Image (cartoon, rainbow, N blue to C red; front, side, top):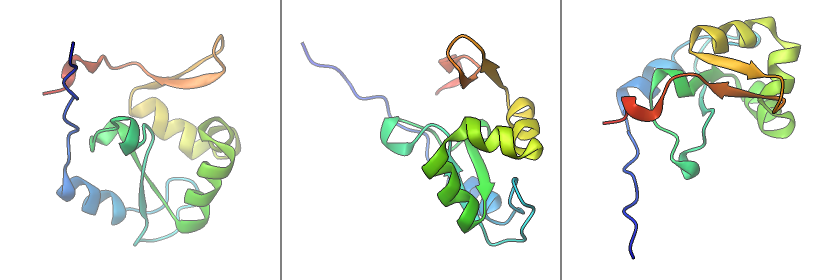
Length: 105
């Protein structure tokens, strides 16, 4: 039995837009990094709900400490997550995307 790998959505224009935005955590002006909340390696798409603009130091911090720590430290990150369709799951102690994967094309 073979499994077909789901093709990841790639949107270079969206990545460029996100890089041109201020850092969501500290508001540092662009250029910034486009951080994928679901990593590209795990199939994370280039869609607005999966990409957050972070400066170099905050990008490093999210990789070192995780999304929950960033959302706890920076209210602006928590606000962005909620606007983008994420919610904090108390049971699992992590942020999860509310939007169903059916939106994939």
